[in-house]
Amino acid sequence: MTFRELADILGAEVVVGQDCVDVTVRDAFASDLLSDVLAFAREGTLLITGITNPQVVRTAEMLELLGIVFVRGKRPDEEAVKLARAKKIPLFCTRYIMFETCGRLFKHGLSGCIERVDDAGKTS
Amino acid sequence: MQEKPAEPLLEQEFAVQGGDFIHAGEVSSRIKAILKDIGMSHDIIRRVAIATYEAEMNVVCYARQAAFHLAITPDRLMVIADDEGQGIPDIELAMQEGYSTSSREIKEMGFGAGLGLPNIKKNTDELRISSVVGKGTRLEMVIFTRK
Image 1 (tube, rainbow over the protein chains, first blue to last red):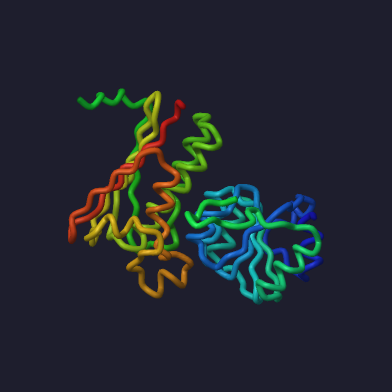
Image 2: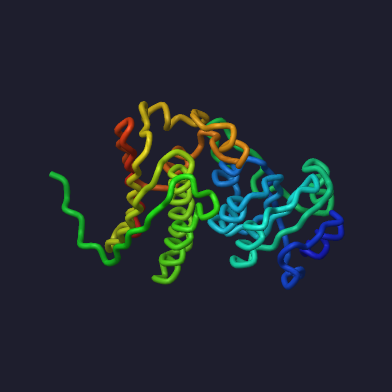
């Protein structure tokens, strides 16, 4: 799906990235733990999170993530928005909780960027 | 006898300020840009970016300040993070996934899950840690660029 479709499905506000609404999103990673994002998220994936500080954008920059969806009506703080603009990382805000956000996107064809981790924490 | 490392092709030093959460990640971002500029491979850039960012967040969360030293030789890339801070009393314990001494504030920011050092190890070819309690910690992260 495109970012435009994603915004429709989630009733999301496009905070940063009006110019890339036609970019295609294929998979996602959802977590409120940036340590886990850094350990498991794949490049080019969408991040779904409730963390709104600048570090979430830094994390997206380091991993070259496709964009960030903030859930539960949370809004990224000002520094996070500034950084996202500078680094051209699209930001969306939805009022859906994380479970609903993931479920709705999954139903529309988005998959997890990894399916599961094994006992050693390796991704598969 | 240990082989003598080759003369670096590129060397640069960066300062990281402990407790500065607004600018946390800037040094990693600059290092990433340098590696892109010199045409380093995508996979290496990603591994360096993750390892450096984890190390930088460790300094911001736990230390007063640090110097990050980037050195690139024909066959390897090294980032040394040398901090002044509380140090790590038991490095083996700190390397265990899930072990953390972080505060509630750090956890609320999405860090402090005890995954940083293990993730640095995962993304580097060599990792050496030395630490003196009450003085600071030194991380030497090495990634081989020629496989």
